[in-house]
Length: 143
Image 1 (cartoon, rainbow, N blue to C red):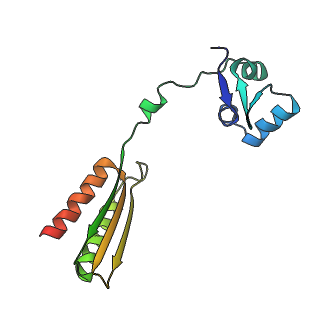
Image 2 (image 1 turned 120 degrees about the horizontal axis):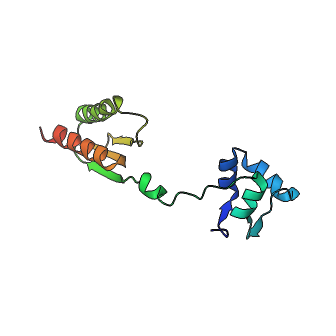
């Protein structure tokens, strides 16, 4: 496809340059581009002319290769003692210690209102990890 247009960010990634450098090339006329609204777009043929090589078309299956699912969950626990809240919070934190940090991130926040004896746990991360943490919380609360 000769009429394929690339963003300045994409061209910078392909060329291994900073985005500002690519924008300067465009402003100086060294790299041909069209302006769409407030952004520049570089045609594939113009990028090939600039680099002297054939541009690789962007992967069409990027979404498939990077597919992931996340769950966001809020757990509200009423009438929970400070001691049990501490145990639940510690167990959640402890369960995340051995986690592979190159994997999709798992975010956890806990809040405790001592006056109301109320705890809120906010979980956001991979579906499987979120489910495992929910099972852990359920186990601790029902024993």
